[in-house]
Length: 356
Ligand code: MRU
Image 1 (tube, rainbow, N blue to C red):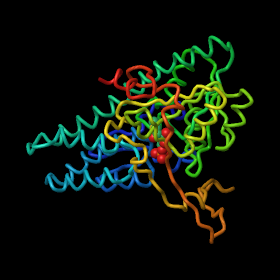
Image 2: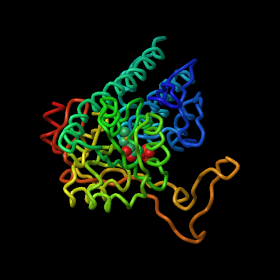
Image 3: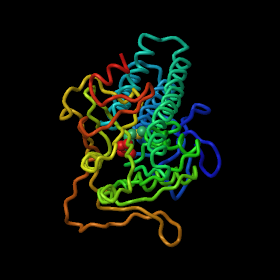
């Protein structure tokens, strides 16, 4: 998608270097950062210079490539794989991508190992773009149906950033929105600010602005009243891990939006590529929920009057704060899962019918 009119992807490989858009600097500064070692990729994932489930999976895949460039020893590769998987615990895409890379490379000692690793990492990215595009085409049907009935702007609420910046291109939750916009359907997006990292304000609103899509940032607690007022036609969010029974783990606050949508009879959709499905965990309580540094809550970053990015303390210094990054929305509150293969019920049967 576009930034200042120029097409970008969120990650690419050039001259033995992984290039990323440093998302900690957005929306104030557009910085392309070079990752040259596997440690660089691990740090970029931990610091959330890259974030969003599909993108951290792709970054980890390229991390494996960088690890081979650094050292062809298999024990170094295995340590790199373990550290990459542990960089962030909740998004299953990280483990999915690293396992896929390691399976592909298993038993290989040839000169071709680097070429094979690079091809696989690039294939992961290519597939993600194609899956996200298909999610858009499938999700467009839901938006179109609402528009055909309403004959007026479709108001869509989204949480966090499940946009193209969270994937390689198109996004998951935003892909149906981009497809609707391209088809001339008038859409307006309510972008939840998404405290504490503000991905909704800093990334979703930013990327929608760049594509010319109308949007309004709201404080995280505003969605409920907008739904009661009839100002939300549907919700679409992303996911970091979808269980085989249809339960969805996504950015903290998603669950409360789903409850409010349920209470107000508003369709609540989750968009995901199949790389986000965890076929193994049976009980949502077994999902590792990331707890991040509480300073992400107690301090906030923005531009000062001189255009310099600054961090300031906003809480009493002595107060304790807790920063859980994800929550789980039970399948019963989800109207449908929008995947690359079509839309299905959020249930074991629904998912199994699509992904045999
Ligand atoms: O902590 P983040 O910014 O990595 O969390 C991102 C989300 O929760 C997204 O909704 C999710 O990864 C889906 S991305 C297409």
